[in-house]
Image 1: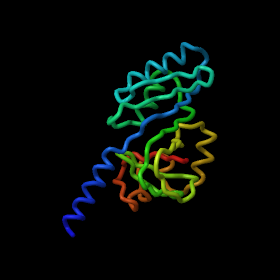
Image 2: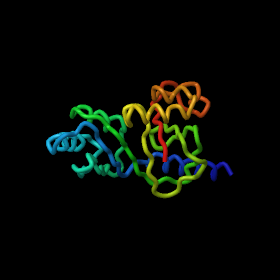
Image 3: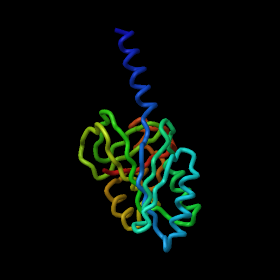
Image 4: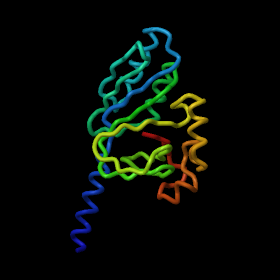
Length: 181
């Protein structure tokens, strides 16, 4: 019995450590011309875990493919766009999930990331799914005001774990991304 429990634990840890995002769709704000789009494209391509970037100039959007096996850093994507002189208006991340139970106003760990789901119904994510980051500076101020009102948990305002997160196993001051489906 102990041997079986050990095998199950190792398998779960292996699956957890391989959890990663495959692609992202990023919409930038503040672009006025093709040169702006090119600046963001170059900035995103310079991010170490990004394999490729395809621009959609008409919609100020970027389709990003991540390197297989590389850990993604969501804040690094935001920093790249901001360093190019622009802002993120929308960021959607796609991954393959395995039996990940989510519910409204609950925290979940995926790979190295801590997520707090907002405005969702209880469900189990299996297979490919896309989540949208709804943290401050990842959506418009108006959208953030609306989405942040949907939760009374203190981590929503600053993206850092608080007492609400500790109750769900997230260490103090850890980065928490607020997301929806």
